Image (cartoon, rainbow, N blue to C red):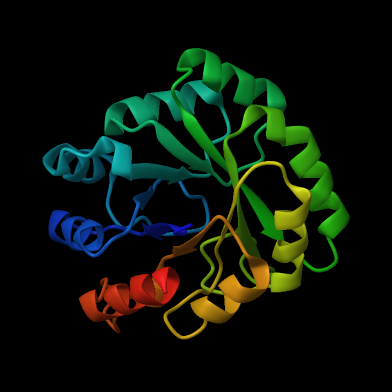
Length: 218
């Protein structure tokens, strides 16, 4: 089975089109982030998504944690897939699905030092209300929960993949050099990359994207 590939941090229409042409399944637009600078603003993201004409290939990535706010931003962008990195209550997840039952919700599991039991509890509690999980890395220096460009203990993600009844995407410091090793160990449903396929100017590099995708599908 081919692994699911998400590439996040889209900066332009040309970048988005290139990434999809090279085989990514989903492209992520990080907005309302708290700890991170946005690559594009809401209006720019909406324009890119509209021009692509493939809303099913686009995902909102956000720290928003209230259903009404998440729904409003998804509606503005025209997307039905949302990746939540904030502390979202079960009540808000239920409300979000009520606002639009077609939403596909990806919930982050942020790997910190020695927090596997907490993450397993989150999996058990949240699984009935989300569609898949994404494991990512906590940065104690900034407090950022994901999109840190840092790897974590892949053995934690491996245990969560075995434990969870819902699919799990592996994220956190992946790049063309380490993604095969990560996949072999973790056996995730899919992988996510952001800065690992960018050049020195912070733009997606077509050769790095192509190499990453090739390494995943081998």
